[in-house]
Image (cartoon, rainbow, N blue to C red; front, top):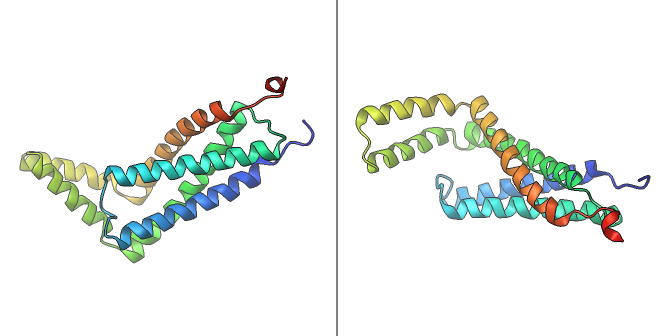
Length: 173
């Protein structure tokens, strides 16, 4: 197909929009003192925003491409958008944890300690869990896990949305 739309600009634009939206949501959660919460509301909002931007990006590509988009083009666009936004969010997270709220990691660990106490773990179990949590809370390891998680969930969302939105030339006839 010689007049195929460019997925690169769509991925960059929608990844940027999604990243900025994620930062705005983080700032709102921080302003509302909800930044330490791991509740269902935060998760639903996060997944909803991801799905929205994947749908918008895939729809834009499909529209720009004469209403044609293969499944793998859809997955590529969705994954690209999610990974660009994840990198932007990770940069913001580093700024947040190093300059805006330097004690953030300790606050999260203390909140987790209280959760373990409330669930009835012994002091030895709690200390063991805290040591393990501290090992995985460093910027490189936590960033790697965030990227892996985003890639996994981004693939799932992109594949589901892409399966629904795909349309090949054969489908037109």
